[in-house]
Amino acid sequence: MLVKNLIIYAVSDSVGETAQQVAKACMSQFYVNETYEIKRFPYMINKGVLLETLENAKAENALIVYTLVDEELCSIVERYCEREGLSCIDLMTDILREISKRTGRKPKREAGIIRKLDESYFKRVEAIEFAVKYDDGKDPRGILQADIILVGISRTSKTPLSMYLANKNIKVANVPLVPEIPIPKEVFEIDTKKIIGLTNSPEKLNEIRTQRLKALGLSSKANYANLERILQELDYSEEIMKRIGCPVINVSNKAIEETAGIILDIMKENGLKIYKEIEI
Image: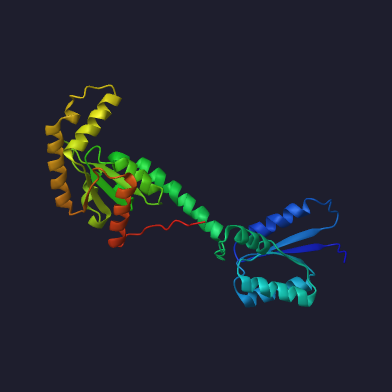
């Protein structure tokens, strides 16, 4: 039946942008002299509200375009439209069915999951920016805002661990322990559950620091790689970590992923929030 005033209902159990944009894209393919209107109906998760919307669509003789992932809600739309002679187009079911057939996996059937993916992405970006901003004790104010604080002497993997954990959406600040530099007072103002100490073996530190000096074109005999100096720093860091009362991880011969896994386990044991990454 030809209509002069075309009305399209974009119905969704999430925001409804997909249904609306598809309808707009389709309308753009026509030289429409007649007026048309696309009405968006988001968050259709209540059966009663959905049926009321369908009744309104019937009253306006609207074309229904929908993105519903809940099979029961899809069925309600299909049955109603078939019974009342309304035209409806399901934008998701056929695609979900085909993907499921080809991958052997079942869809989550969870409304608005793409929004959660976007949220997870922005949390990750925010955490990475945080790790860069508050790396190596640059600004002690970050200690008060961090999900976790790593403390340790130079070359105990503080920075790579901070970045790795940031990719897990965790805000990390790290603080270098140097005998000649006072510890930021903020370290003693926060819950010790948030603090994790990092240490390394003297031999490994000597090896890593020597390589670091060579890479910088400096003498390997510098105090930085001196074994006596390293032992002094280790004694100092041990004293500080005991004073804080934080758990200590020896990163010697551990991959970053392994150490990060231990940190995540400690966070869970201490009841600290870990942002769950969404799997797709």
